[in-house]
Image (tube, rainbow, N blue to C red; front, side):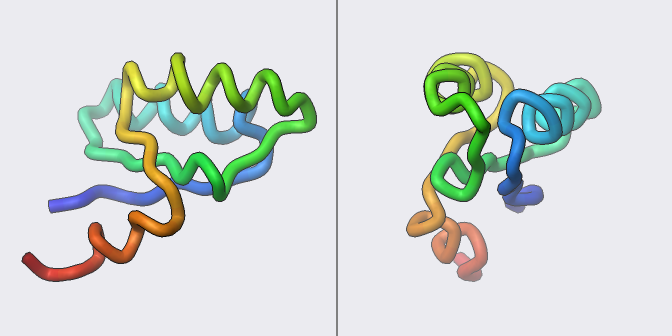
Amino acid sequence: MAGPALPGIGTSGVVLSTVREAADRDYHVFVLADGSADPGTEVHDILAQKIVPAKVHVITIAALPNLLSPG
């Protein structure tokens, strides 16, 4: 069963904090990389490509319907 899909503005703030808390609580979380942003695009890219995937799944908005489909 899929957990929440997490978009957000402030990859280095709200998204990262939520990812860390959810991972610590053993939630199955998906971060929408192209549904999140940060004022520093380099910061967002590093977080979305290297840091966040160590804790949760990073997907695109296009992949979201696959999570919501029964199967």
